Image (cartoon, rainbow, N blue to C red; front, top):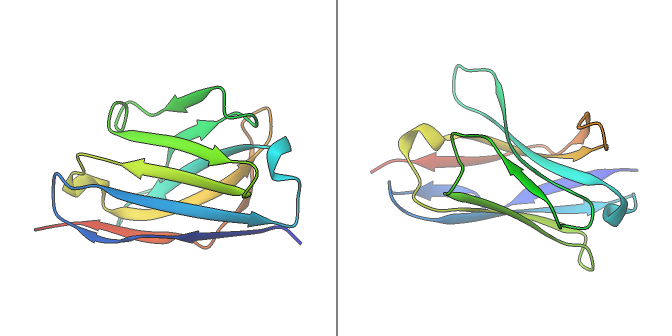
Length: 118
């Protein structure tokens, strides 16, 4: 069955960096777009970034453009999110999601907490 398992979250100071990963299994990872979505405390879901199946095209929400980088290693079935210049407002539960070519989000991971605080 499809499984997406995030890792690498934690507490980081404002201005710091963090990389979260998402290990995929149960499907042909290299055939699917992938996305990162987050949910801040008391707020709704926010799509953060997405990447094409081959990794050649990436897309970002304005709120993270220039600070976050999505990437993937199809040989390792792993999706990454490098987060730099982190702000307190980046505090959220971060989910990776299998995404189809119409940008519909199908399967989701369980989420990983990222907290930006001094």
